[in-house]
Amino acid sequence: MNIKKRIEDAKKTVFKQSEEVKGKEIHGPDFNKEINLKELLDSYEGIGFQASNLHKAVQIIKKMRKNNAKIYLAYTSGIISSGLRDIIRYLVENKHVDLLITTTGGIEEDIIKCLKPFILGEFDVSGKELREKAINRIGNILVPNDRYILFEEWINPILRELIEEQ
Image (cartoon, rainbow, N blue to C red; front, side):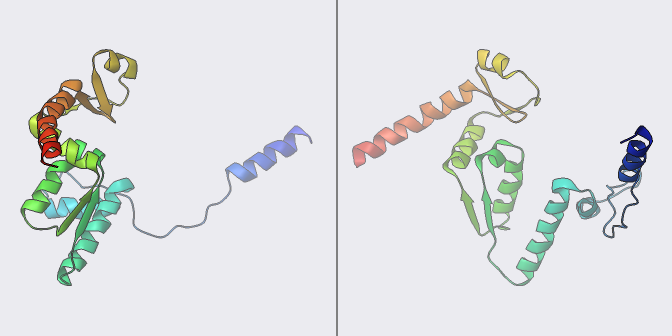
């Protein structure tokens, strides 16, 4: 195959005319205008990635509330490790959730965060360096070992008492 033919074939592939795509245009909130919380949350619909799914979830929950449906919230320990824990706390305190479903790790992380906070770090910190400093990482969340030690000191007497009662 000669070079001109290869170039023409490559151009046909690279410069192929696309089909028109219809749907919601991607855009975020305009912070040059004053916006309230409702407008900010409504703007999530057009942001893309997980923000759009959050917007869909809010819309579903609004429909569920209209129909007096029971709202179940399930989450893993990673959610509790993050700042989303405070959103879940708010939802429970204000009776926006009827039932929580979580892992044992979710309960453990919640207790640990009550004892001592987790710290925002970076995703690209060396795991080896963190390990040498006895610091654990959950994504970009840093958890020094002392948090787990505090948890063990708190839970072990309770577990011993339960064993004795049994």
